[in-house]
Length: 156
Image (tube, rainbow, N blue to C red):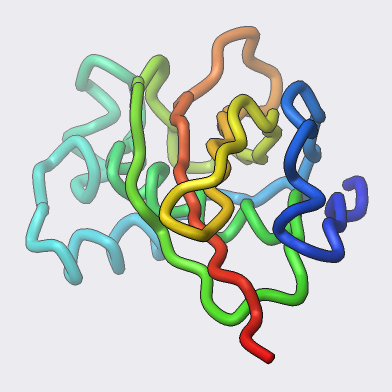
């Protein structure tokens, strides 16, 4: 794992397009995590929670929910980028979300990123970071998403 890229102020993001971020530490995806996500979201589809049935299913194993993988982006981002000295930071949204490969239970995933856009918006600095969730040993990622964050300046 590499240390997060630190930006002392949101304005330091300006001109940082193309900056590579990560990789993060590998995160094991176990059945307990998948079952917990199923309980929280109510999505108990057998491909996620029925280990016996899933052995004969299309993936040969249970798989993580796509939205579980998506939610883990929030855990990986602070391992890749740290912005300091702002009054408030908010998630604005996401663009171009693509689920490219299933994450089999028992595999490990990690995040890498790239700053793809930085702009001033309504007195704040807004950054778009393209996050790729890699699956250990796979040439194809699980997920690619553009996350959008807005940092409001400190007030004096």
